[in-house]
Length: 385
Image (cartoon, rainbow, N blue to C red; front, side):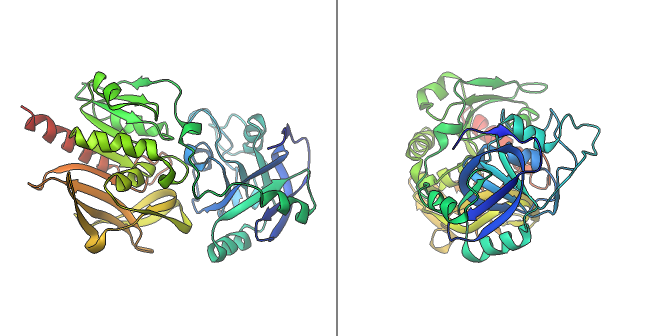
């Protein structure tokens, strides 16, 4: 990526996909040149949470909602310490923020962090193209305006398949989010790209959360007195994340209760012997219907994933820790959206979901999953007495 500078006025920009499809528009945020995987998000709100989600590392996000930036940028809703998207693509950029919470415009926020944006793009046509052809590499530039020259650079970029990105996003040092109210449990949360709201949702239920680097060992987890283990969301290809898979295998051997979200669902699947696959264009947005097969309830959920777990034959399989089965799936396309592991007596030892029950921007249909984790922790504690 070349050096970036704040944009001081209308500046032409160009977006070129690896297959040569080209869109022209106007620069906002920072000037410069960026590359990544082009993906689209269908959320009508919550762009600040999206842009600061570490799971979007190395991705250029296309907003399908036509009008973006109307609530500006505040100091409360970030899901991490920085903007993680490689670039941002919108149709109509709001000229003036209309929220009392706003402290700066979206363009100013992106410029401060060196993130290139492009507006005045036909995002409907771009989204349809990505749905038909699949997510692909892309370049956005205010410097190389010749589409063929930019495409040549796009084609030299690494693919998302095979990318191990956990080390780029994990915390450098452990930190603790205290339980709110009376402390009931201690949980080790392995940071694969964790969002700020996740430890908050756990802490609201009396859990003291120790957020740990992805390189954490089982011994370090034990030293913190963890009653259970959580694996977070994160970017990249789960098939390349061999370290987290090895750690989770040891966690399961130690019979510690487990809960995983998004990337943590994919790592759970691989630790249990299931494969993962790259989806054509993935699920990204806050309106995905998922059914909980244990209750029959349908939840409207927040998603951000380009990879998915492959379902075992018959939706269940035996492992050395018990039976793994598919607990949730997407009603749009049947993709696996959750797993659960039960021991020989039918007790729930661990579970995971592909979507985001912590979703700060909503919806909150799946918040009950944090209560389910508390139930698993309680059962394990009572069983050890």
